[in-house]
Amino acid sequence: MKAKLLLFGFISGLVGSFVGMMIFFGIYSHSDQNADKHDLVMDYYNSHNQKTESNATPVLFGMNEPAGTLDFTMAADKGMPAVVHVKTQYNQPNYTLYDFMFGTTPRYSTPVMSSGSGVIISDDGYIVTNNHVIENAEIIEIILNNKKSYTAKLVGRDAATDIALLKIDAENLPFINYGNSDDIKIGEWVLAIGNPFNLTSTVTAGIVSAKARNINIMSDNMAIESFIQTDAAVNPGNSGGALINTKGELIGINTAIASKTGSFIGYSFAIPVNIVRKIVADLVEFGEVQRAYLGLDMIDLDAQIAKKLEIEDIEGVYVAGVWTDGAGEKAGVQVGDIIMAVNSSVVNSNSELLEHLSRYRPGDEVSLLMKRGLMPRKVTVKLQNKYGDTGLVKSQSIDALGAKFEPVSDYDKNRLRIKAGIQVTDVVAGKFAVNGIQKGFIIVRVNNTYVNSVEDMMTIMQNSDGGLYIEGIYPNGKTAYYGVKL
Image (cartoon, rainbow, N blue to C red):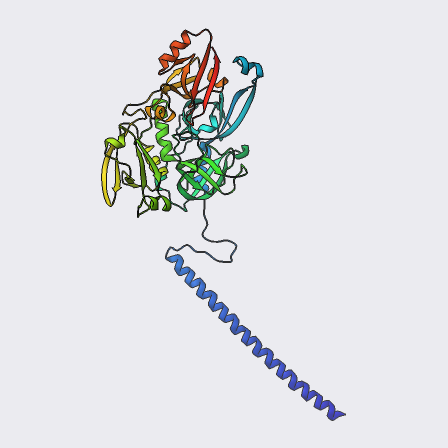
């Protein structure tokens, strides 16, 4: 029995020693693995420190606090105080069958209110917004970021670019400096600031995803669409607000979204500030935009058109038509020429070309780099107004009608097949607005008499027995007839 106990103790000792050795070597092996891991971590941090010393941006993958982050706070601090809330109101006439039958002014109306955004561009109260934000407005209220409220005056507006300029009676206001929209790059970070859904002073971030984008959203037949496309979230109420770069500079006015629902689903569009700058300067100086024309019909080139026209290189803008006595014809431009650049700025689409032209006035000269066949050449073109000369255009107003007018160009007369007419360039609160006559309408005859000038219109009004029967046509070819009671 004693021998058995001694044998059991001996075997237990051997097993215990063996287990102890296994544990010892296991721990040693595990310590070696930890040492290897420690060496790997040290190697990583040593290489990380070396990268930091070489000014590389450190990023610690898997860590909760990355060392390199984007910071938009400075840009937002600069931009937010200069973005305002624009609230408008106008009265919508309630027409009855009697009014339609006898051409009378409706006795009742319903107030219609809407809102958008605007951007202060000077410390003395000039504010840029979209034309569609204030269109038809009889009352325009501006609410600043500090909640102060002002009534704004409309300085001028331009439907072709969807820009309007307002003025409030205030001084020492915060404003945003102009940037340069030509300098922005695809992939660059930008901020959109506005008042979506009446959520005041909302800031969203995104990148520039395209430039010179034409989305065919404007109805004006002379519309200039060369939008900056971004993926910064923009919704109803953002219209007229600021698109700024990370320096806090204004690079665009937010205008539209691509959506099937009416709300943001991925892309928004802004008018480049280089267009805005020129429109604002014209509105301040002349009260209306002085638009310059090449006198050419131009189309974008794509693979299908290039193949049909037997053009090898798909670049530039194709000249499909030349206006008689236009600026292009006088400079020697011909159908079939391809415009490659305007004043050294390369253009590959009609929208890009129009964007560059929008910065000039009638009488200015531009240099065109063109290609005819395989031969490149440069020509200098003296730009014209839409009437075919180089003078500045000035509309005339008839306050009794609440409208401004200008003569119809020969181009529009030929296109619409009319032999007379004056065009409505603006409609404010008044008899035209009440009767639904819209901006762009061309008055051909009034009380069965052809009209070629504002003076003709005034003479007819003086000889009228209290009413005007107006016949005319819109730029899209739609004819219309209105009865206006004086």
